Image (tube, rainbow, N blue to C red; front, side):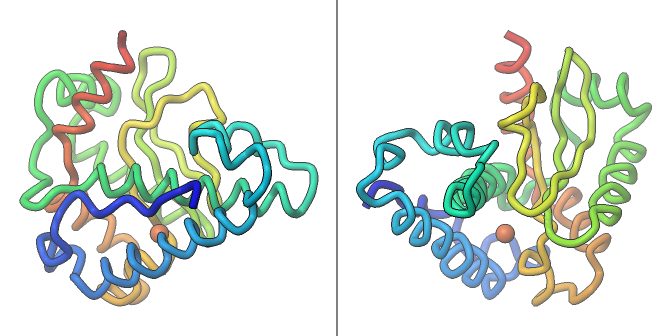
Length: 203
Ligand code: FE
């Protein structure tokens, strides 16, 4: 098996009630695991099997054949979920540490304004996808992507994300995507890891 399902970086019952253990069981052990299984089937015996996951995503981003497109979507979804889990933490949320907080205030006016804009963008994303906090040319920005697409294939550097596929929130929030994204930001976001990524991206 070329690609592996990374374990969650926190216990499944540690994000409740923001994200229930049942949601994480389905989301990580079923959905995320299925992308890994599928990617391994698709790349078996090919050169892609030897690449790092990020390289597979970049190599297949402009896929020309349906099979390459499938490889891209499965590889990107694995990367997106690995990244998403690293964006969450038990007892997370609250206000970001410095210097992230200062940058949020500079680029969005206030943390509340940033949160509201992020939630609005996540809700506006039509259908399945992802909402991202990115940094590009030294400025923070909010973007959204469709299905498996992510900032890896753009000039932007991903700092934080929230999965807005229905499988991420339907069990706990039904159709209330806004409620889900707001709760994740306020109670489960790992702003410490975002702060570290911001410092790395500034180097
Ligand atoms: Fe997901």
